[in-house]
Image 1 (cartoon, rainbow, N blue to C red):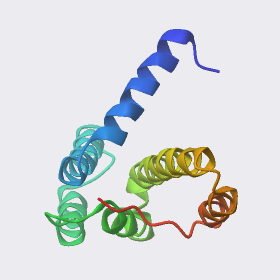
Image 2 (tube, rainbow, N blue to C red):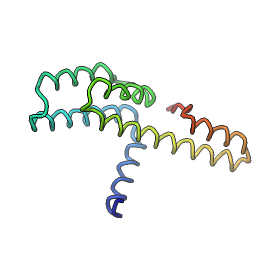
Image 3 (spheres, one colour):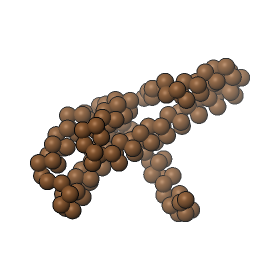
Length: 136
């Protein structure tokens, strides 16, 4: 269980992630990967060749102007190739789920306020079944 200060910090980080644009988010992911590589290299847990392979893969996978759905899809394969990137995959999956929850919740609340209960119910079912794509 997190303490109050840790919960506030986590909420602040989450809100930053939820509010950043897709390009900034892509760069944040690239930075997180670089941090992992640097940490593993310094600790002697990875050699330069492996770090170079991972860096090359990341540059081939993430491109400028990707939307959040494309970023999410690309990142999901990172750990298929490199177990070192599991923390990044988990974080991106959590961030994506949080973004979807936020958008769906806001939209469902607006539909309910408009007395469009069936539409809100349909939207929530799609969200539960992970049939929702985010748009800019």
